[in-house]
Image (tube, rainbow, N blue to C red; front, side, top):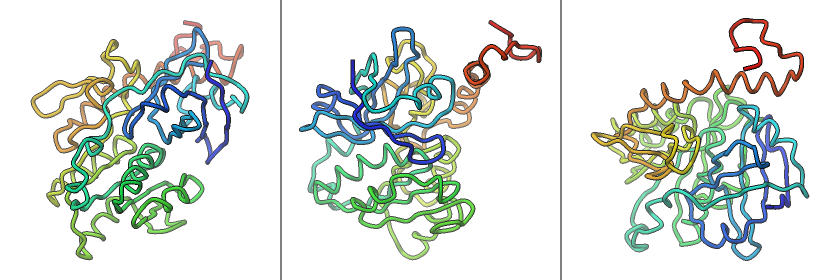
Length: 295
């Protein structure tokens, strides 16, 4: 069992937990993920590592309620435990293996959308700890949905906050901030974009036009996390890849986002049925004729 040491709600339907997992904390690197299960028959939920403390033996995860399992997970409190907490899985971010002196000469831009701030944070923190300052753009729908702002500000060279509705920071999408920074004369050797699939797609369309190499995380389409189910199959250039074992990070200019988003949509009907059943209990009888009833 893996004890939850801290549990808090960061924003509406977005939660943070510190979990006691010393073996995972000892070996993990930025960019990797874990799989959690609440009980023997629980769903396997892949979550990118938000932070880690090797000395304390803890891992920080951030998740958003998107279905029945994450809805139940949000009810867990400090003192509760996960049945399984497997990791680290996936490949670390590429820069972890790069020559530090060469890395210090690169101008890097990180773009985080929504809950994507969670996996961006440990990467920016690792770079800061190795003497490298980077620019970070964090976007959210509203000020109330913004997460990890103080944490990100403490490790970023420059932090630019965007809100879709203009309630805080720059008014507009993260792509408009990228254009603004480049228009002001900023030059970047690489961009790392993590967030909703549609956000990553449009960031990549822009950075391709601006000729900025871009890395994306395809964690949003992972299901099993070990390469067995095939749900996270991706077209990356001329190759077929699987996000969980070959990634989760890939060259964003080679990813077929339209195909990936179609695959992601395939699971939403089933997830929606499970969510309604969890919320409505015995009253969810399937009378609409669309959800399959008790099946």
